[in-house]
Image 1 (cartoon, one colour):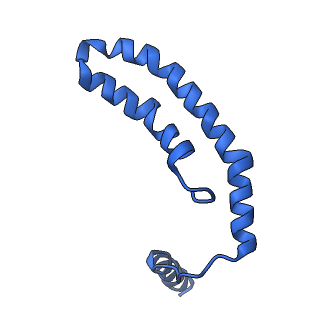
Image 2: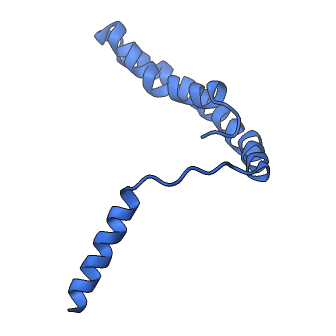
Length: 95
């Protein structure tokens, strides 16, 4: 009986996590905290990851040169594009 109750509770919790959460407007305080965290922590680390990605891109591009343009494009899509988009094209406070 106890196992059946635990199984039922686990199923309920699993189904509950699949349901969409109700939308709520973020308060001004939450937005200020998000933007501040983004400016002070996430953007500088994004710049650092962009620089490191560019440094790793150079040897990986040299190694993928035999594959032609497709290999270089794939290396760029791994090392350059994600950190660049995360750092420079994303809106402040959204991550």
